[in-house]
Length: 361
Image 1 (cartoon, rainbow, N blue to C red):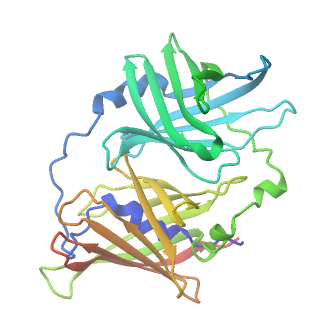
Image 2 (cartoon, rainbow, N blue to C red):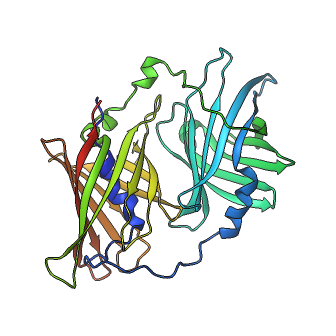
């Protein structure tokens, strides 16, 4: 298996909500839950939850159209504080495209409803701002996608009588918005997605930069500890599981993490995507935390082979920057050290852990 242990590189990032310690290392006791941003907006997604089946119609500028069957699943996730969305399309040859994976959560910096998505032949993660126009109409928009020749686009989904209607509009150059796709879906019962019909070339397509992350890929169990500031030499142990792999036919990886019960945290699990951000010349990580918050981190592999990731903005004023150093060992393990930088510039260990491969393929 080319990719074995990237997973724990993201552990330090995805566990940002665990609250195991302050930047100086002291565990923090559970606090009263802070009112969640856009809580009412998430309640409106109730009408979208479930399984759906319908058609997608592509509208070309020459007046021609192409119709594709589509199935999708929408559910609450991350402690009911985020929305998970998956969709799959059937082509003219009867084969199914790669799955579209997406999450809706709260942007950690802007506090806006945000939609992150990856699918098809994607080499990066699409990120879009969302807003409810009324009780039954949800709109997402995006701008600045010049690498695809698109100035901006907007997606409007309407919920009505157990059906959803979707219109995707694009604006290219100085052209006004024009309809590119329309969808209509109805609720259905349980189903399983078909195996994507990506070619062998697509299945194994990986950029050189993503290949460098091979020592960090795979499925792992981990053991870690949070050092205590109040009691020198005392640590608070925790365990968990983590996994990351490439999404077939894309240049993006998908990871999941799960932490066992910890007396200082209610965090349970999370998801993330990672890709090579060519314009920024670094790895970019976009994750959904247990609080339903969408977080972004950036990093690179240093000359020693360690993956160093930074979270430039952290919600706590006493921890404005977090850095995670993930170092692979010859035994196939991964050692992780997470550091926090407080407002006065003092640096301390937040936690450290060691992974053990859970499986090899």
